[in-house]
Image 1 (cartoon, rainbow, N blue to C red):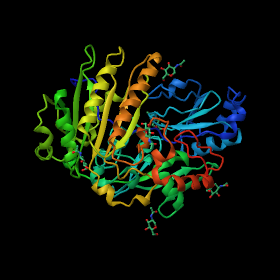
Image 2: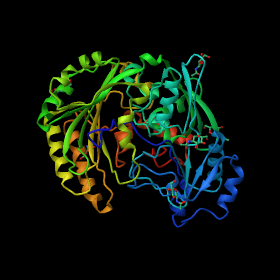
Image 3: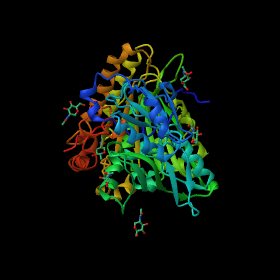
Image 4: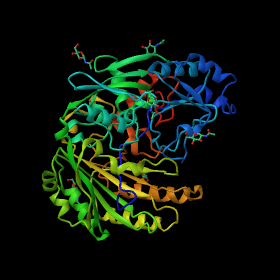
Amino acid sequence: MRYYHLFFILPTFILTAVAAVPEFGVASIGHQRLPRNFDHGLRAILSPHASISHNVSSAPRWSEYHAPRPGAVVNVATEHDVQAVVQFCLKHNVPFLAQTGGHGWIDSFHLGRHGLLINLRGLNRTTFNDQRTEARVQGGAVISEVIAEAYANDAQILTGNCNCVGTMGAALGGGYGNLMGLYGFSVDNILSMEVVLANGSAVTVSANQSTDLWWALRGAGPNFGIITSAVMKAYPMPRAKNVAWTGGLYFTEDKIEQIAQAINDTALRAPMNVFLYYTTAGPPSFTPTVLATTFYFGTEADGRAAFDWLLRIGPYKDTTAELSYDQWNTAANSFCIKGGRKPSYGAGFDEFSPSTWRQIWNAYVDFLKIPGTGYSTVLTECYSLSYAQSIPKSTSSFANRDIRFNGAVIPWYTDPSLDAQAQAFGSKVRDLWRSTDGFANNRTYINFAYGDETNEVVYDTSTPRLQKLKAEYDPRDVFNQWFNIPPA
Ligand SMILES: *[C@@H]1O[C@H](CO)[C@@H](O)[C@H](O)[C@H]1NC(C)=O
Ligand SMILES: *[C@@H]1O[C@H](CO)[C@@H](O)[C@H](O)[C@H]1NC(C)=O
Ligand SMILES: *[C@@H]1O[C@H](CO)[C@@H](O)[C@H](O)[C@H]1NC(C)=O
Ligand SMILES: *[C@@H]1O[C@H](CO)[C@@H](O)[C@H](O)[C@H]1NC(C)=O
Ligand SMILES: *[C@@H]1O[C@H](CO)[C@@H](O)[C@H](O)[C@H]1NC(C)=O
Ligand SMILES: *[C@@H]1O[C@H](CO)[C@@H](O)[C@H](O)[C@H]1NC(C)=O
């Protein structure tokens, strides 16, 4: 349907919660397999519709680069199954990791054959209250499922923009999304959470209950627990009004400086966002091009007026249209393809520098000369932040509220012998972003980070309190794979 293979609206990624048991770590590194009779014991504590699989491909990952390689997958069927599995793993010293979409791209997963993957996909229901002002979203629901239910219920929920990504996984890192200019980040839209903690307890966490965990989970969730469901704010919206003007504007590369300057100069209004991509035409030519995807919640006429500053630069192709809420993310579905290697690097920055973007283009075009890299992309998400910034930073551990732009570079290929070149390209683009980021310290949105970042890069000023709370709630560092916070 689309002219370009990789016409996608990148998301706001990531898997759900992550965990592993420490005493199994160093001492048990030689332990290559799950304990004998493991299946039998686990089966006995699961609900009837849960299952255990030794086919790891039954819960595929978005990127095979440094993917976890568990010994077994447990497909839970009830929220209580999650607690039972965690308790079982704690008792038997088995490391574990929870997964929904499997999009977490961190390079430091260490779940191995002696570990268990908890597949949350069976927990995929979204249910609304009568007024459609609140929705209970289960921990294994992907974004398309939440949006479909919201649309069917004449409502909106703040989610990420990529259909296949786990809703809560993306949300726990902060949660950017199309409607955040109006509603804030995902973490601002959570009302309460059901959480399985590091000691195997299941608790309800809200602004009124467990206030330390309430703060910590919204920004650093995978270090503190597994969310089995959350109550999210919902916004009633009649279907006829649940429409946005969105799509792609394709530009020739000579327009890069103009586009970068225009993005830097423009204060985005609440209903709008824009993403800038370097992408290719797909097979067979893989010709690189510049793509801006626009989003305006409202009519085409209002959207075009709001994006006049970008349209005036003169795209050579325009695929924008008025689309209903359940279709906003459809164009991004090609991005959902699982498998292949995607060692992705990210950086936050405050200045959209024309000269930096020219240098990144040159690096991109050079990298594409390597055969088999044609699906690689560079992207930046630019949202309207005024509303989100009116919510005090202190309300959650999420530390990125003040960052204007988030970039990610995704080298995409299948041949592992290209890893070193992909890493060199990815880290070079990250260095370029950081060279004009306007910050005293490196800052990266956790869901866009590579895995080599220090706590301060992803958690910023929340780091010391997170370390203290980690010591209180997960002293043995059970949840230790996702941008691990060592207990202080
Ligand atoms: C493993 O699961 C994948 C995905 O469901 C499936 O395609 C494959 O056939 C399975 N392999 C085996 C050996 O059952
Ligand atoms: C969604 O959950 C239902 C009920 O647990 C399950 O039957 C179904 O397979 C799940 N969907 C996916 C895609 O896993
Ligand atoms: C917190 O408590 C207040 C007062 O009891 C109540 O109105 C509110 O709904 C509670 N909030 C949550 C998120 O439970
Ligand atoms: C980009 O915008 C920032 C913040 O408004 C400003 O400080 C900076 O000078 C701008 N850069 C350029 C190249 O215009
Ligand atoms: C920021 O990251 C770059 C690599 O992108 C590194 O060279 C530099 O030392 C880092 N700066 C700080 C202050 O940590
Ligand atoms: C588990 O940890 C929570 C939070 O620290 C605590 O409230 C609860 O009592 C603990 N449960 C058990 C069984 O120790």
